[in-house]
Image 1 (cartoon, rainbow, N blue to C red):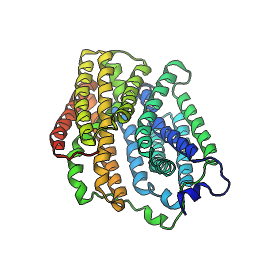
Image 2 (cartoon, rainbow, N blue to C red):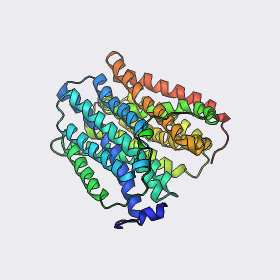
Image 3 (cartoon, rainbow, N blue to C red):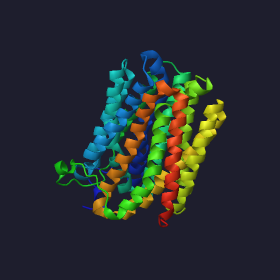
Image 4 (cartoon, rainbow, N blue to C red):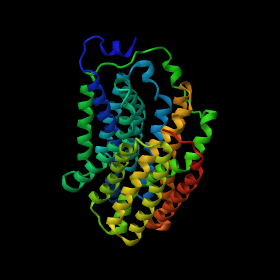
Length: 399
């Protein structure tokens, strides 16, 4: 059955444009939900007497459960259809919002993050596939910017509500729960975009593989990929606390705004630079990462929040540019049969870099302090970026 006939199946409801819009906005809900706790971590530390290490464990649980879901049920919608899998992800996200809303201990926060990670790991590939089904020409662009916009919106919304609204540890989760429930209702009106087929159980077996002809490019881009995701992990776990310690500004909105700045600029850089060759974008992105980290660390040292924002904006250029460029460089090197396995390997590397260095930062913070930890962390990012700048000079020009 073709995609056209799938769209024109029984009881036509919404068309392609509506499916694309639904997939795009729903795919933003999951990263928004994941970044919403970021401005609240400092409050959790005060109310629940959590250590920086506890915060990074809460944060990292999300990445680990997301990976587990991504590597097992990430391709399930190819066999059972998009809608049942999207529904499962939305129900899990709703459960995570309820757990967060009532969390009064470290254990419940960890449980909420684990459920949230499962929801995101199920949703990311499924909604991405639905967007590609309905709009193949612009699907890649929508899939590239949706996570960054969602992360931006979630952290900024949480910062605003925590600062200006009542019930700071509950309201943002109630808002995201309502959004999730509305998306569940709208899902019933959406047409299915793919046909079910046998092989669902076999698809649950993880497939992580780097094809031989893509190995060199993967190795060359790994240092800066790790650097970018490790930096994002630090921002989403410890940056609001660091802003408070380094500048003396205790407003959750300022810490949330720094994180939001990173994600907003990342999404803008994906859109702005998409017309350039991928190898050129890599150079721009890597240099931006190095300059941005240097300016950010200077802002921390001088206790200057303006420099923190400026450095974060430049870091955002690097993060978004490198993310899109690496995908454009690496994925075309795999045959169609190997592409999913290669993409899985990319996400394994990315989310391990997203979580493990942040855990190490949480462990070292009691000894070095948050500022000292940030200097060491930033130094590691600069070293990886410099290595990548040299290594990727050998990459061929990729459009």
